[in-house]
Image (cartoon, rainbow, N blue to C red; front, side, top):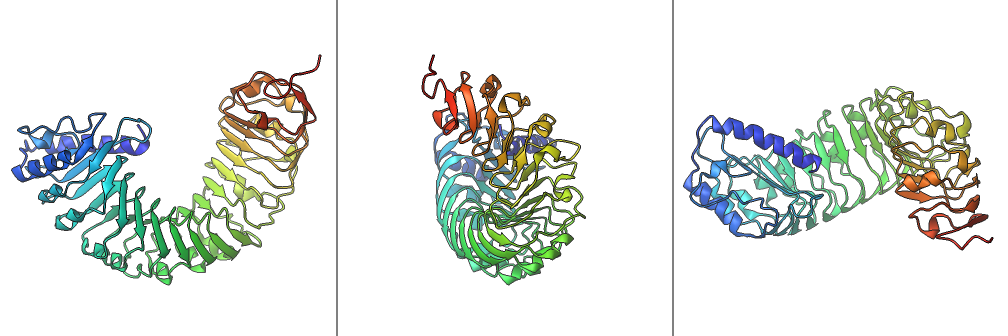
Length: 453
């Protein structure tokens, strides 16, 4: 079970305990609405709705919450992206409009639910929370979506919605969370945020938005904590006003077309823990963020920065687990490189730089490291003397100056690439393809050519 499903399970158990104190008996309208929803489901291979049986108390059904009354206040039905049978096929029945006391609807990771944006939501006068995530809902968002004015959280990510963001969404002035990510929405992001001052989290990533950010973003509350606009087609320069949001903990602008310099005023972002500006066209010096309390994940890869070295603030956090600085113009020797003393790194990517020396010393200290990439550098060391930490799964040292033999310990990795180096000798028995070893001086043995006797 994934993290989201686990959290929802705990929440459902807690709310079920609350509802039991009221000895609730399901209202007939609610029972009819829920059975209508079940009738719209064509496949339920893991029995998510098995407890939904006519003539039984629907307040006791799995995922149905009644708090101190006979009316359903929350509906929590979710699958699991990991467990292959935990999904539903079918449509969301408009019969759910009968649940007139519904405050929250949580339909997550069901994967095979189809249809348009559910129109019955407009008929639920007490609705505050909409989580319809990870399914196949499609078509445009309704132009009148702003009529859902009581909403506090709207999360409809992971579907196939298309078209523009309706301008009426600006009427959702009570929203604290807005997540439209991982859909197929397009056009420019409309200038909708002037009166949406309660927003704490905005995620519009993985869509097809283009153009510049709307100026009304500057009107958002200074308590904004999450802004994720990654994987779109946004362009222009990074606005200075983003540095006003000193409470930001997550800022993701990756995989867009931003150019110019990163505002020096980013030094005001003292609470940032996740910063991802990778895969843009950013240039110039990067601000020195010495005042950050503890960065956890930093990705500046594949821009046009010329860092020369890796600043101390980037590696001194006791909480950092991911450091990605590929193609950042770094020119250092790993022989003398010292990371933060906690060594909790899970991911390090230093590919496509001018880095020399050997990573052996610090890799031997990284007992939590799972993924290390340093392809396309000038590393020079004996691979046969490299010790692999227990948790390491991925190692990419291709296109360097590495010599020696390939040690048998690489067999414990899931992914390996040591191609285009100066390695020699017979390969150990591994599951890796020939491309993992291609372009070396004198390697032989499966999956390469047979060694000469």
